[in-house]
Figure 1 (cartoon, rainbow, N blue to C red):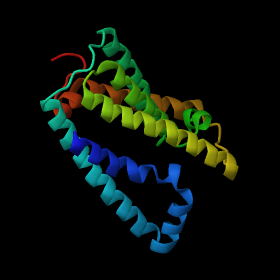
Figure 2 (cartoon, one colour):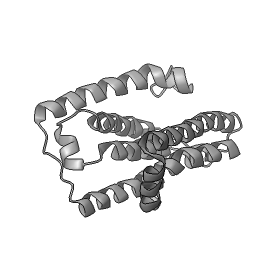
Figure 3 (cartoon, helix red, strand yellow):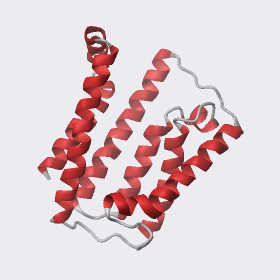
Figure 4 (cartoon, rainbow, N blue to C red):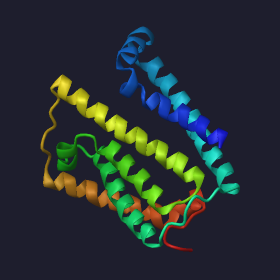
Length: 193
């Protein structure tokens, strides 16, 4: 569990700087420059990500089961992760109305993904991993919306056609992950073997 927690700190820590220390981030960007800052940010985040994967695998090998979720939670989680993939995709498809309305769909996608996994999983490692991501997403979304208001940022409304592109690509990515990649990468088949 220690490796997982260290990984979460190293990964979510840099991703939380704008939430808890925006003035410090601005100073560091000015002092280091954008490329060195992004390089350091990426290096620490990558190390954290590797430790999360390793630590979660180690924790799953010796599971501490906290509760037994009803089977229906798996179905609800599958539906929520579909929406999470669509939101993640909407963050990258320019001119879509999903981003125009929600402003930060990637963070909302992470929030849905984490919540869905908390519903369907029952180990202590799941609670630590997905709970940390859910907490981060809640705080980051709040901070991002506050920054938008303070800076007077507005988002174009987007078009239905671009939204359809985000929905189709997000659904295709979700299907690929749910039916093949989740098992190949994580060893768990959300829809059975």
